[in-house]
Image (cartoon, rainbow, N blue to C red; front, side):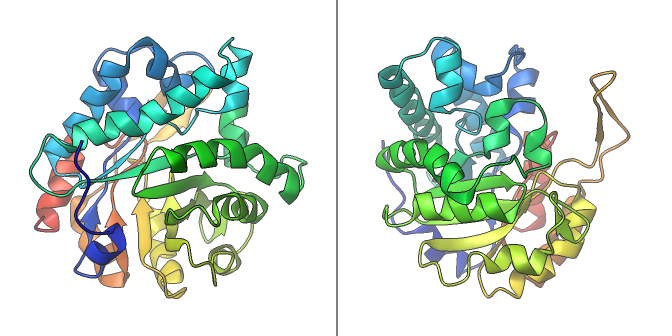
Length: 300
């Protein structure tokens, strides 16, 4: 497996870089069953070829950063399903290896971001969109540290601390990732001008100030309209901005179906770039077709 010839941060100095889209929607399009608490992480053991195929679809669409399938992968979550610690370590490492293999399918530089989802993702009860789990920062740091260390040892180009619902968890994740020698980006899931837990975004982005490891801050797993409001606030932090929203459709938890139409418009992405966004992609319900259009819009 080859590695990019320069750090991702260096590439950002030359202009925006295209992220991939939602992994779960692409896996579903490939016919994968994602039911169950482990979600896409189950496929790391059961059908890793499907994960590699999903990454490949995005890199061929123009994505130049691939986010790994480790969002829902935790030692605690695997243990509940009978997976021992050594095997879980291997699966976390595999998530990075699969993305790297897909990255090698094109001649261009493609970076790998190891996904670190919030504590609530492991609970699989929707609390990742609320935060405030009743845990201290120290307790959250102890939860995140082992898998962050394992992912860092697997050799990604960056750690993606993503879909973070509140500032306590952001602080814990940044502490756990500190000193590992791998740059990180920190992205919150937001609603309006605040985190899902209700903290002002100025305060939320300020958590990353002074951290030498942080190479980007921003938002993900939110509506495109929320990015319109958040990108300027993130840019004011002086750090490259990362944005990858959902399609804009709404999830109906009662009927377990998506409602409404997509508002993910590649044309508005030029405005995000002008406002300071340097890593731009999609999250839930944003597929390879939209990423291809995004790349074309940015001239990548």
